[in-house]
Structures are given as C-alpha cells and as structure tokens.
Length: 100
Image (cartoon, one colour):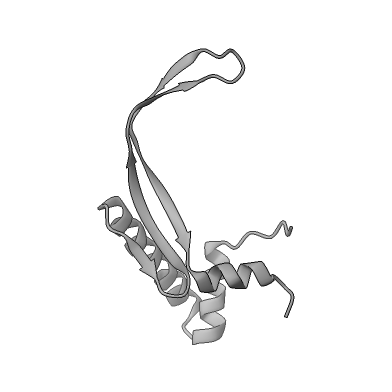
C-alpha cells in the first residue's frame, strides 16, 4: 500500500495543470465543490457522482453494545453516519490497481 494521501492542495494543483485556471481559482473551485457536496450531505441528500460512487447519510438507531474487554453492556446513542458505495467502474479500476 502507498503512504500517499490525496489532499485538497493536490486536487487544486491538478485543476490548475489540467484546466488552466489560476492556482487561486483552482483552489476556490475545489473548495466550492467540496462545500456543495458537504452541504448536500448535511441536508440529508444523496450525492451520486457518475462512474465514481454514491455518498449518503444513514440514521442509526440506539442500541446496546458491549465493551469487548470487560463484557459490560454500554448504550450506544442514535447517530447519523456517512456511507459511500463505489460504482462498479470504480470497484473494477481499484481491483486492477497498477496492473494495466
């Protein structure tokens, strides 16, 4: 596995190189897209990016869990969780890895 992490800076640099916007405009574009996606998820909307995957928010109800060390029962409060389902194209691409 690679230790490399893709960051906002990397994304804006790619936009700068491939689209030809200035570095400032590229960074603003990346921030705008990420903000729009975040706002939609906070509002409970599903975000589907074709050939990439689908982000959605699930409501999980309260339940009783166990501390694995002591076996003690612990209440787990209800919460909202973010889920991601990759598209089949993305799954295939990741499965192939660097093998061409």
